[in-house]
Length: 192
Image 1: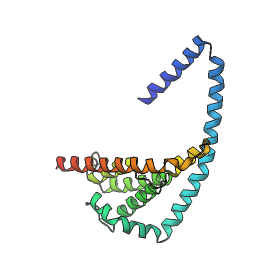
Image 2: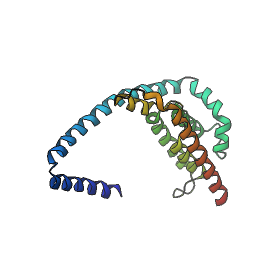
Image 3: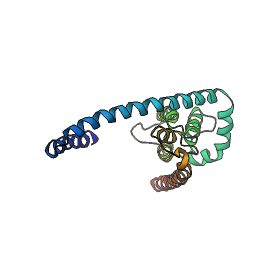
Image 4: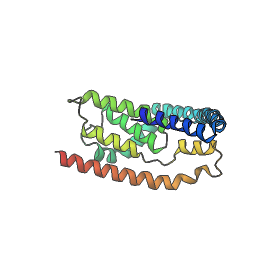
């Protein structure tokens, strides 16, 4: 769908710029936007590398296992059909921990690995398991204590208070997680 919508917007923008006499403004905005996008990518690259490195180090220490044991009661409630000592349980725990710490870029490969492991054990490959559906909802809502990516973006764009969004992020992500998990549990019960 987006591969249809975006080209239409781009074509309409060019047509409007031609008829309104703003072709020079359009041209300069294209190049300035490209420059801003490159600068943003370069500034985020450092943050991504730092937190991915921290998660790599944390995964080889006992920190992840200690945090996983703190999350175990919640994880057992969310994923009752996954065994506590399984590789999937550990992968889901690492993904949740990365999301809680606001490491979305580090959480993505962990989430993909967990989803791949769940799919390998899935008997019906065309239908999501209850755990897979819950995991998708949990990842989408992703409670974040420190939204590092958003703070890095705000900082790179010159915000005077890049950390000013922490409290609203807590409220939004906690509400989203509660609503999503509640809806998921209700739909799972209705489907059985």
